[in-house]
Image (cartoon, rainbow, N blue to C red; front, side, top):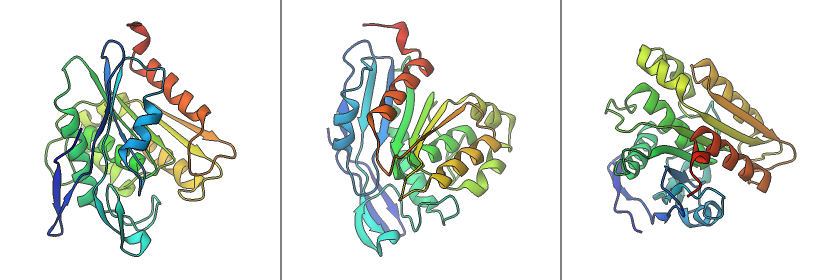
Length: 252
């Protein structure tokens, strides 16, 4: 499946890469967009996710645009947004984040109305998923455009929270935003040995989210884990999704 999505940032038009879809083996109960890390593509994660014991989930694995990345001295690679440092304290490419969050929402907007929707990701993909969570709770993107879908689950592995300094103000701006934040299940996993996005940044991201009203949050640390995933973590994702999305109610 190919995506034709494009966006224009700072006068430069960028095109999203190929989107890979893993269709449910059983009754379709949930659709989750999964976002790869920097320099990767949707195919690598589609193979991992397709082997999970989640027969009722449809996985959509898009590929980010190729763009210059400041952290790599402007070297171009696939990235959901520009980044200088993988930290909650770093500068934020709000325009790039909004563009990718809008692309993801568009991918989910045509799903059946009775299917629950979620977003997950690894590293930069996790950061983009968390930005999407903030947009959903706030009811609009950072640029003021309305957020168009309802989210039921967010997963972030080895990632960080972008736009952290503005999050609490956004969520406290209305009772609706606070209610959405409090009711949105979020699972975060992070390795204590992560050398790319430090464990401290993962821990602080969870703290920022909780302090901003995202109380339905589960954060799990993995001893000895670097900037990658392991079967234990993937299994935890499967168990968490089955519980949070009610997937055990259907065996077919």
